Length: 518
Image 1: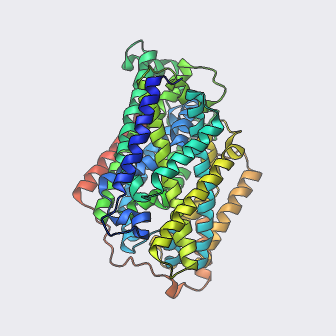
Image 2: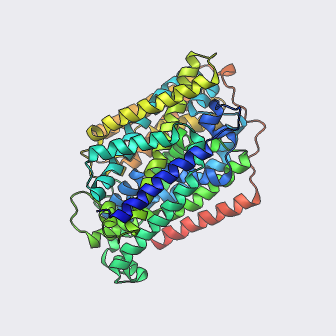
Image 3: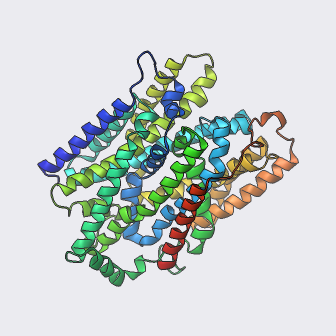
């Protein structure tokens, strides 16, 4: 339970981050916020804000609580989501962002309309709104409220409400600018707090020595330090061996890091392509650290707190072992992660609803009204997510795995649509719609008739089948012709030496980590 000192530290953080968000959101005298200011931070984000905000948006309750729970249940193999994401970010920076920025893209549905036509924009905008509200927002609120409730004794329903209300309040005035320019503070606190809990739990196991504690885990829990699970492993269905490296996880990562509004929105708000690329490179380096922050405490919990009722209780339980003061700092770091991700998703819901629905229906509306509509959309999204969180997530032991399974029904089609849209001019709207619908139907069919097949392998198979369908239908139907407004003919995919060297270091680090923990 939190002491008076711990509570004071958390309250100081909450007050500080709220005031900082309002301060960075201020406008020059005589200037009122327009849509570009609110939804894309005035297209002026520097690289450090982009990189920090990418990680802060990504690492939230479903990462910290959920991934630590998966570490408790199946071990270090869950770190594949992080280390392979670092490689994915390099590809996004080199090949995807130059196209989006060249064509002045604000939202992912907007790209789809300019590339294919209106139908696919509407279909995918509806899909993303449903996903962000009923999967992403609910999962962060639910898993975050678990930690708040367990450490403070607060009723979980009140914790849900308070988390949603504060995240809404701190970003509703400034929009993306309030989120992104405070995320360097959030990420710094997250890294410091996360490394602190890992060090203290390992030190407790090693009787004062972090190294001895880690060696003890290696010796007593060797089965939890394999990145590539064998087919006889009870968790092989979740992380199917070499299929993780060579198959479906790439598809899921491309969809998440390259074509996901609340993630890619930071890159779209960059000052320039070069600044965006430096930002994703910074994020890739930070990604290498994430397993030390979120997975190691879960593995340590196997020794320090065996027999937990649910794996997702691992991280909150490890926090409960921390001394006064340190607990407050680590708890503030957890709140920082929750707040940043919630605020990011809230802003993206507002962005898609306002620019892809409201602005299309009311093309002559003034900029101030667009901002007001965005704020109202934020409020409604949070209210729905708070009410839906328990009914949707209350019965799951590993929230992180639930999210991956659910989104795996849609990610193959999304990845096909965007990859073809970026790199194959013959792709048309008929092919894109076929891929979107085919992805869901094929995923449902495989889940029903082949339930034992690992979902990550299913994602890979469905991606290939959806790709074949999209290509076949595109070739068999009339070319999109004038509907394709995306320019790629004048884009250079060459990157500076600094980016290339950084990318090489990230790739080498990932290769070494897999070699060591094969």
